[in-house]
Length: 357
Image (cartoon, rainbow, N blue to C red; front, side, top):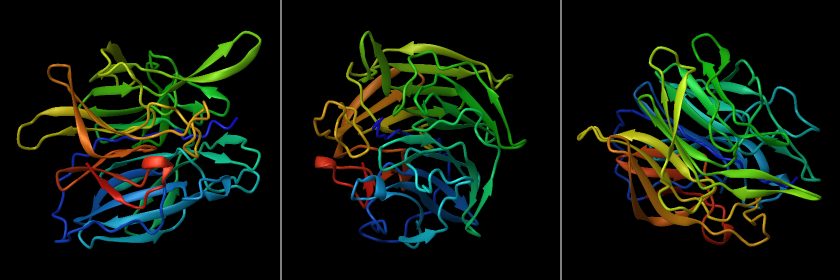
């Protein structure tokens, strides 16, 4: 099933005191164009880094799926290549993967799952979880996901727990919320995601408030093959302060009524005003295979819209960004600007830039 995908996300809350970027008029381009890459942001030994794991190169063919690691030194405005993301057991010789998700706690990056793509378009969800240390360029294998998922959303809580919400598992979506404890290297199941199980969704977290939007669900039909359909729905979850596996979920009013696939998203706290919001950027209103061509065979185009969910009063603000992009796995903040790394632009062009919005 050439689901392609593309699957989505990430999305992590970054509450970092960010050093000033060296005086550069432009941000350095990535070593290679890439999309569907897991991204995160860390500070280690007073140096800030943006890190990209695995993804798809500009050819957009199964042979362009890779496991490369690229590291951006913010102060130096320079990219370096790190050790490739390991795989515990190559699947039919395949080591690259799409739709991994990444997040970080303190100076450690965490990478979850992804899926391999074979010549015949068969896909296998990878159970692997790794911690990455940027200082020594070393990966440490951690406890595997109980249910391997890709195109999921990864969110951190209390600098201890990482929540993987919904996503794709081999041949169908799951509504699971799998919680990884970074202190004990163990997994638990939390209150399930209340909406239709999806892949390619996006979300963020601030304090104990989660917001998840959109994605693609699977529809089953009588006497015909199943199909993929955009899901235009947003949900807010409140994590119990006493029991991190208990989440109270509520349905939110959708900001536009039109679903967007593979947005970049994250949660942020304004350090000056204290305003708390979850931000969603880009994506496409036409869900697509990993080459950017829609399941309806129509080439997908990116959006330039930005959705901001204000946590305090539960309202949405919709604005237009500087550029239109899609196929993201996370949203970061650099020098007070929202950024993504790579992705697809107009006409499914695979980008080699740090995109500022």
